[in-house]
Amino acid sequence: MIKMKNKIVTKKAFTLVEILLVVAIIGILSGVVLVSTRTSLDKSKAAAAITTMSSILPELVTCADDNGAAIAVAPTTAAYACCISTVAAATIAGCDGAGEMASGHNTKWPAILAKTGYDYAGVPTGTLLAGTYVFFATKSGQKKIICDYAANACCEDNDTGTRLNCQ
Image (tube, rainbow, N blue to C red; front, top):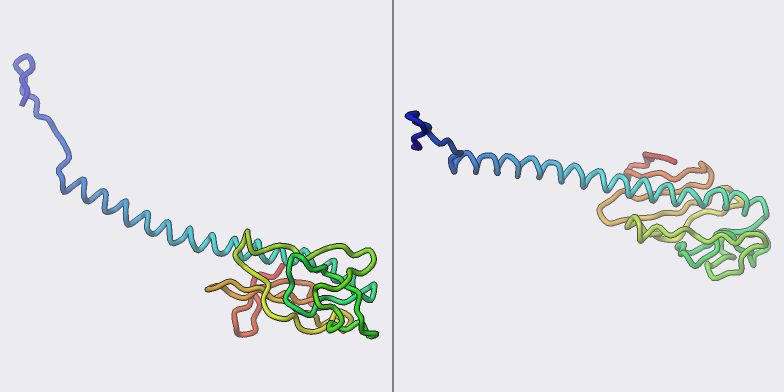
């Protein structure tokens, strides 16, 4: 107690229990925020990968119009999106990723790994000329992204055949 001009003033302070309670509440709230932030970050990376992968679809359309072929191996950033096919019917088997670019088509596959964690996976299926070309990207613990030439869209796949978040 402190005496001031004949008045008694008591000094008030927080107790240790009150301070610990506030710290515990803040800890719980920050944990909830971090979990929701992580989910949002994963969704934004998936959206970025879908958008980046979709950017190659117009080049594939033009390639098919010029009787070119798309690569028959998992795409890489060093490979041209549209190649000259060594097969008369311009099938996918004639373009192996190291092939010669088709005249007027110098676009390479866009990079997605560094920014999103997704990477092109597996051998694409189908052909451009038949309109059945499909390529994929995967990331551990996330839904696979499928880009379908016929649908002119890239989407997340939920493993049941249903495609989500198409762009």
